[in-house]
Amino acid sequence: MSFRLDDKVALVTGASRGIGRAIALAYADAGADVALLARDAELLEQVAVEVRDRGRRALVVAADVLDAAAVAAAVATSVDELGHLDVVVNNAGGNSFSTPLQTMRFAGWAKTQALNVDSVVHVCQSAIPHLTASGGSIINVASVAGLRGAPLMSHYGAAKAAVLSLTQSLALELAYQGVRVNALVPGWIETDLTDFLRSTDEIEKGLLSRVPMGRWGTAQEIAEPAVFLASDAARFMTGQALVVDGGLSAMP
Ligand SMILES: NC(=O)c1ccc[n+]([C@@H]2O[C@H](COP(=O)([O-])OP(=O)(O)OC[C@H]3O[C@@H](n4cnc5c(N)ncnc54)[C@H](OP(=O)(O)O)[C@@H]3O)[C@@H](O)[C@H]2O)c1
Image (cartoon, rainbow, N blue to C red):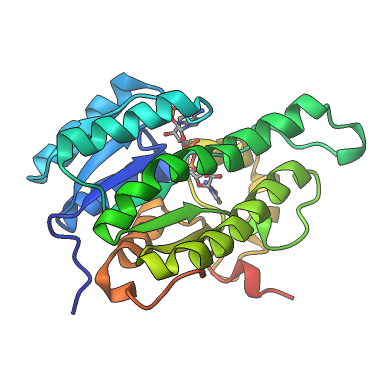
């Protein structure tokens, strides 16, 4: 069985909290060294301590994924310090508002595309030369909101649908160079991002009534499939979307 990541080097974006932090720690548990990217250096340092407590190397590369030059520098530093790059997880992303498209301010639309899509382009363009050298893999964190209609979150749904399309295109461009590209598609996960959905019982009950398993997912439940996608156990898998949503997307 080859579900381990021993001696691989991974770069995880959005590693300071939530799903990204859980992925970074799960990768360390599976034997990888981890470069941790987000804006909040202090929080990243705390995650770095948790990685080192697991016996692995951690490197904090604080950067804004909207800044292509800062991302390029973070990728270069990661390779210089950790030796090589085998796995990139494009996890930084999210959505900070809900509103009908008709009245949405264009700035909000553009900001959401930049955070969720442009960021993936910046990281991939910097990381691909290193991944072709190592025969590595890319994991893009999308969302069930990108699988079908997302009323009041059209900006976020469209951005995550773009991430799914980008995953397939990039998988086809890179397969012959030995680089795999897959998407991980979470359903509703309990993190800071979804705090506002737990603000009233009514909103939360309505939301969970659409989830066949009837509960929030945990960041750890996304992190373990992320280990699988990065591992040799997934070595014949590319251009795919692995949905982890408690059955939500199977609902009619
Ligand atoms: N939670 C869910 O239910 C859910 C469902 C489906 C998909 N997702 C996706 O899963 C991913 C992680 O979500 P989450 O729930 O863990 O969110 P979260 O708790 O809000 O964490 C977001 C992470 O992204 C980082 N980040 C945000 N903007 C950034 C920027 N401009 N540059 C660099 N880093 C940035 C944040 O760190 P800093 O603030 O320190 O920069 C933080 O580490 C996102 O792509 C989200 O769309 C989440």
